Length: 95
Image 1 (cartoon, one colour):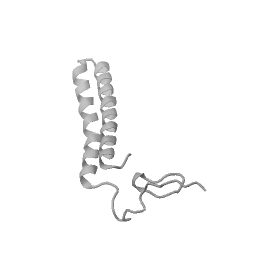
Image 2 (tube, helix red, strand yellow):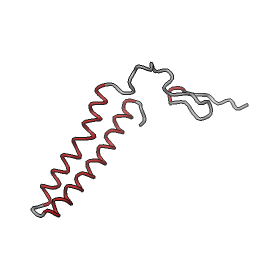
Image 3 (cartoon, helix red, strand yellow):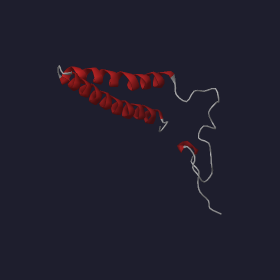
Image 4 (tube, helix red, strand yellow):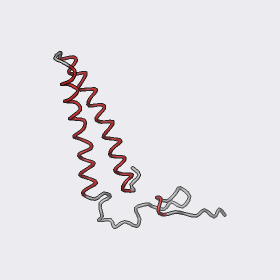
């Protein structure tokens, strides 16, 4: 028999099958309002702002503006993913 100490504070493990959310009230949301609001802002505002900025900085040509907008959008989306993961880790969700 393998004696493996289980740490319920770190989400269980595959050996014991402990559900990391078992201690949480079923009516309790996984994130609070502030974390949800910041995650929403981080998800939508930076890509939009960087897409507009990229199109503006790219110049007058339609192709250049499209390319600038797409580069800005991609950069903003990558930053949003990183920021949202940082918020989750700061809250202890490890998303």
